[in-house]
Figure (cartoon, rainbow, N blue to C red):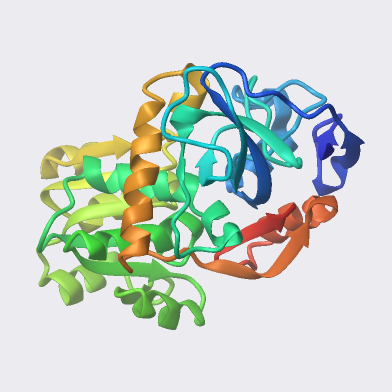
Length: 328
């Protein structure tokens, strides 16, 4: 099968074409003919940082976490999937799990689900990592009818999904953006837009919540921005973040009685821990998609497999709107 490998870690140019043996479906796995994969920030981090990132695979490495495709073979002990089924998931591209930048992928059946019927393969491939992340963060934060929700980075990969899911579950959603063209985007998804460059936190908290603060803050920016999340949260509020690798003063969180939820959705893949949870969430996301509650946004350029380096560069440029997709 055709694949794109990296033999050393570095810039987007490190991808090289290769011919590899087609994998077999081991017990508990399905063999998928990959139709599309999408690029996530963690994919670019692995490619660039290598051993500095504990979850990176050894070289030669086959990257690519998200995928959508068609089941070609079903391994021993697998139920619920048959040859010809269209599926999607996030099941490789890190540690000892080969990824999706190839024509075929052997995937743990617990990490996949049937593809949403109303999405194309490219759209479905854009959803697993960001969808699971957004779903997990909102559920842990207690999303529900009437909750006021702030999504930091509402036009980003995780953020635009979090906005839609928060709306689907009954939240009243606001979202920060940093580019003028993203105001209309987040508003089309059902959120009130906030230009974080122009509005101090206190001002938009006053304007959007009457000064009470948001019940839930989903911070897909994280890092130093967590201080803004603590400021924006209501008393006894919930803060979920995808980026918490920093030292931070927790005084504000203490005196507001905040709960902080750190979402690291790769744990089931890395540690073989409750992998069936990801399959279940993907099934629920598919139902939400097919009911009209969620649609992933795709960046306009599409890339074939042999131009995956360009796809990585596109995401790293910060100019993409929506998920960057590679079609195989």
